Image (cartoon, rainbow, N blue to C red; front, side):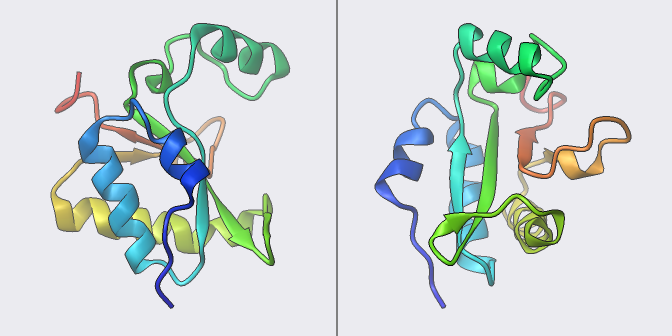
Length: 127
């Protein structure tokens, strides 16, 4: 099945680096599970709110510069937050990044504060 980004997901990609947008678009072509873009570019106010809630641990997020996105599975017309539902999305983002030669760091790989929805451009190539 071929999925398409919703108008809301497209809006949430505004201000996100074009290379990361390409990875998200390609991942949507590869994934067996539909997904939505939860967040892209963030304001510092939003970032402070997430830190206060414990949903983030830094005020130096790549979301602030448009170098990160959060995506989540869209199953049965709702966002799913259970870990197994993220696995196909993570695999699709890995494959898309590899195909497009865009180095992406996946929050699922972090040793502390594992963040399944999070994907960011590698600072080495995208400072």
